[in-house]
Image (cartoon, rainbow, N blue to C red; front, side, top):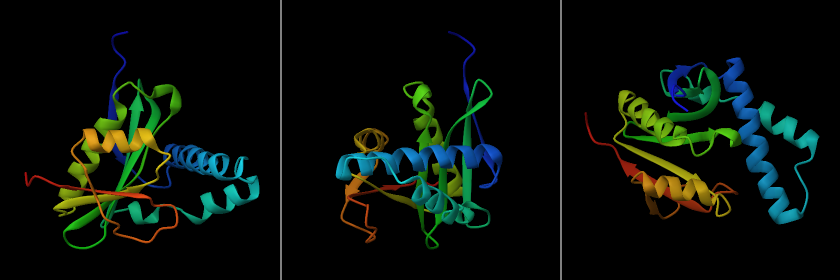
Amino acid sequence: MTGMTWTITAEPYDSPAAAALWRAYYTEVSDRWYLLHEGHRTDPDELEREIAARTGSELAPPVGQLLIGRYDGAPGGSAGVRLLDADTAELTRVFVYEHLRGKGGAPLLVAAAEEAARALGARRLILDTRSDLVEARALYARLGYTETGPHNDDTYAEHWFRKELAVS
């Protein structure tokens, strides 16, 4: 079909679209972990506590940015960056609704996040992900991210990536 396109814009981390995408993202990655390791979905009360506890306020200027991708005008995905130090930003909350996967949104969101990181002064982006998030690991490798040793001790981090940003 023609005419269906992605538009990506910076948005407040607490906008309605951002909140809905965060809920969908967190629910999916949490449920995948619990199903894999414990054979059940996330406890609903725990899910609500975690979603509420992680507001995303670090993805606000001047140290961060949240990007929302809209597909044919409707919110479809997100990506966030936050400065960790003067040269390094973290890529986070890269997510596309399941029904929109395979339509080119994730590479566009990551590219927009790289631009946002450069605008914040970062010279490199780092991220972490889990072994079971196979699609995410494939995406980052395809987009030029190199797997590295650990850069944090996050309980759920099993793979770490980095990419040097070309200075524009």
